[in-house]
Image 1 (cartoon, rainbow, N blue to C red):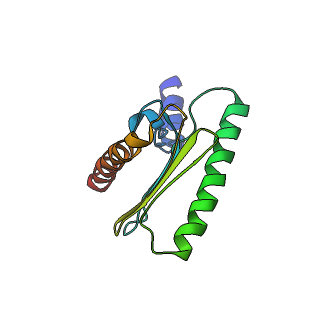
Image 2 (tube, helix red, strand yellow):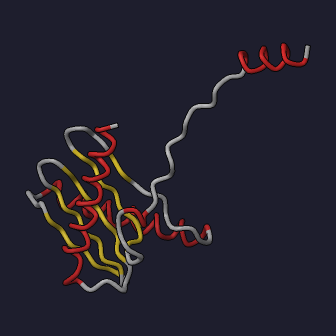
Length: 138
């Protein structure tokens, strides 16, 4: 009787959907990156990792700062044919890079030197493209 009950219970159990693991900043870049959004234009595949763990006030400030820079960069790039834009304010650096197949917008902490921004952004692009290939393959 118990075996019969267990069998029926297993048959009627609803399988939980498999959730994708969270996308973490550390999978794409180092500690000096505050936030980024990568969008592959043809597939519309987008990567926007959550802020690093920490106090909620820090995450909120990071996202507000990212949105502030993103808004200004979007305004500038919409008005001119710019494919590479670097903004700096209050110690933060913001890099927008738009090419035919992707858009990348990155907020860097004040510890990043302006000379390193392009290299760090290219690292994110490389890792994001690798992730895209993994998703397409699965």
